[in-house]
Amino acid sequence: MAVFDTHKAFTTLVEAGFTERQAQALLDVGREGFGALVTKDHLDARLRELELRLTLRLGAMVAAGIAILAALELLSS
Image (tube, rainbow, N blue to C red; front, side, top):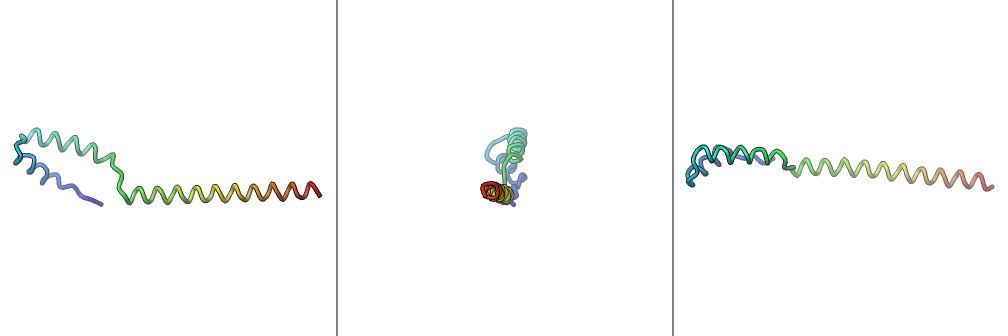
């Protein structure tokens, strides 16, 4: 997980000419935006979960199809 050094960013902004108030406001806005970002680990976990759900659904559909075919075969004989 990446760590963002806000103190270093604050210092860099002030040294670049931002006032302390401007630098703090920019970091506050950035912090709000960073909360909406997704990490690679989170995305990988979510994709694994979706893959499992799709696999289970497909398995259930195949099993249902086989059961229907078996029932039709019994009815026709």
